[in-house]
Length: 134
Image 1 (cartoon, one colour):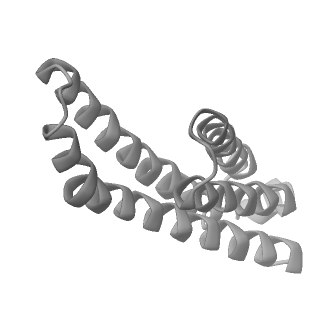
Image 2 (cartoon, helix red, strand yellow):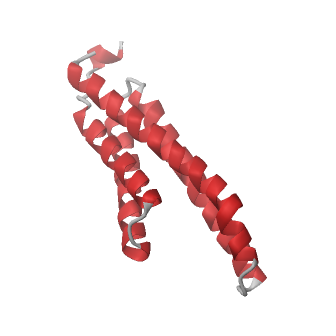
């Protein structure tokens, strides 16, 4: 394995772990702080349920994207660079949109850092040749 691929793998792994930690914090933060505050609000019960689904869906989405990026980073497939870049850029767009809508806070900063690390790591991967796949 080349030094570029090794560095790319380390960056994607670090970004994936940070994104997984963000998802865990999102789940626990929602259950311990967000959902009780939501229940005490005067928001319609249907909208409260929708908020819970979206909140948990976002965390699940981060788990899936980080898992896909990690699996791609440790595989030797020709599409690994593409998969990692789609995951990294997708989370980066989400972090930017979240920061624009809600302002900067720990959650946006964590997923933004994870996205930057995954994107840079994905860019470092060299193209897999048929000889490498053997």
